Length: 504
Image (cartoon, rainbow, N blue to C red; front, side):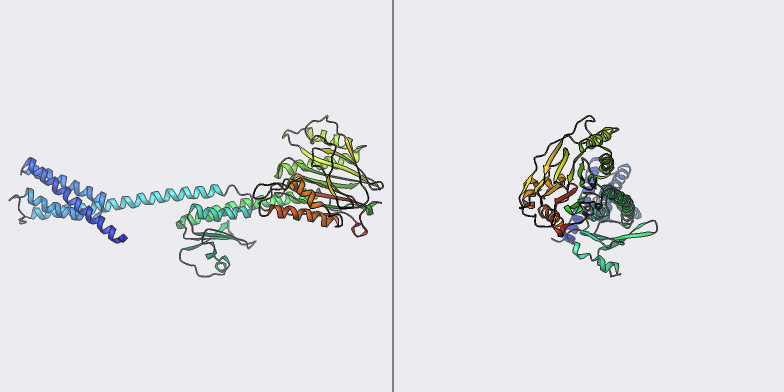
């Protein structure tokens, strides 16, 4: 049975039911009260109410059928001669016309009320969808994340079969939905004709167009489309303002990190490589390197126990304290004790940082280090063997102001390499939530002694990237490689690579 046939059947059944209801009402009333003027009037009033009820409940056609049946039934039961269909009085036509008018008016009022109720319900549902859409856009803190949320929410909230969002400046397009391939934003931007059900909405902020949204078969009114564009424009402007501030903060933070080592007398006896990649635009990892005199090279690596802007601020404080203390102190242990006291003072946020600071005497190959709760370094011998250093451990910076740090000692042979890293490497996680681990790191570093320090560092970074795959970066990544007495091809100042933050 088709939909039209089913509708016709329902209308017929309702018409029959309304007619039978009125006939039964007349029959019962006529049997109880017989024929009289008062009973006829009361019956007529009840008939009008019955027709009005049918009109309101079942619509125009059933009520019209019921009103005609009511007029005939009324004549049959209450007009003289009773129980006959002799229509010879104007009152009988008046009754029929009255009932028809009641049916039409009642059904029209019912349809109007139903339509307004449906519109009110649709408006309420659409308002709730817009609220959910706007609330979802409060979470993303980057343009890419926001664009992804916009297209996903259009599919989820407004039941679009496909949606796409294109940035005007970047030219990037984000898509979502089972039919996402049907939306070709490049063609739409060029003024291509719209397919049926496809709607293109410009995203504006003030008088500036920021991009366009395209939806396919979305359950949105024109008002909702304009509201989606407005909400998206406001959210995008908020995120871009934050990104601008973070980019400035990132430039300032990266300015704390040395990009090269100032020349000193034995700079041909050491090769350095540094790498840093924050999880967000700014982070808590840091490194430092400087020449203390003609023979001694200072370097350090650290990790603040947090991410984002709070970690970046504490990182700047930590790195500044290290750079000042290493110059002003008589020994490495005194310098680290001074840094710890500085970080413990006025530390209302109760933040802390792990660090590993070391001084390499390039004339002897002896490394003196002080550990502050950091990851153990890996040493790669000249023959390519890699092992983890059993270090002299210490407490993280920022916990106990009177803590006394002890120094450890490593003796490097010509060609040995020290690899310092933050836990973003050892705790890098793939989609299965499996950690890269220290064993994999040691295996990746083994037999890499013949490479330059830059190739060695990039090789480890590549191993971590292959292990992680498409899983999001879980922590800041920082690497510092120090080689003692390199080959002539490796002589020179530090090679420092500062990577962009991973998109959120």
